[in-house]
Image (cartoon, rainbow, N blue to C red; front, side, top):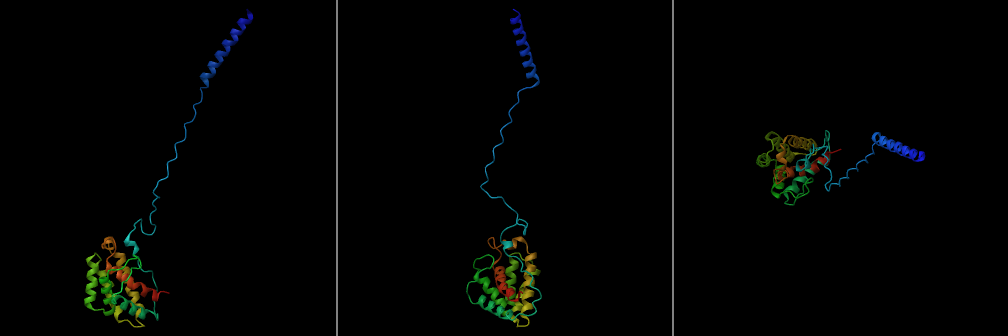
Amino acid sequence: MKSILKLVAIGAITAFASTAYAQHHPPRTPPPPPPPTPAPSPHPPHHPNPNHSDVTGPHHAIDAFAPVGSALSSPTAAPTVTATAQAFTSGFAQVSPTMGGAIAPAAVLDVGTLIASGSPQSEAAVGAALTARGAPAREAQALVHAMAKLAAVNEASAPSAILTAARAYNGLVANAPTGFFTSNGGQPPAVFLAIHAALTPMIQSIAR
């Protein structure tokens, strides 16, 4: 009988101890599973253009010419002006160095005539083509006048005349509204592309 009572007492103590332990030590809840890893996006992340304030398009395909110094002399400057005028009045297609496509033949001829003759009529035609597309009048006039001066250059005066034209071009690029550079079906006006194409080899002839 004593053995039975002892077993009962031990069982009661054990049950009490288990209950007390359970009250002070509740079972641990397993941590929730980690969230699923999102699938990679099919579109690459967009990174702003550091040089053009996250603006892309034709406007920034036509940048200003880099500074070329004083260009006091260059034996290839005058021949390059002559060759450019001949090429632009020959009727052969001219390709835009930046846009990559052929420039409208009428615009090429207008710019070629401006460089070859420097006539007031050619100045007026090219200037009107620029301002009709939104170019600021003052900068357009300065550029067209500088291009017309190229018609009378010689070996001594060609480098400075080219430099003046390049600076006038840069002035138009800096001051023209954004719409000017997209006014021709999303591209700059054809006459502007022709001016850029004509000036490019001239600038290269005086760059050091």
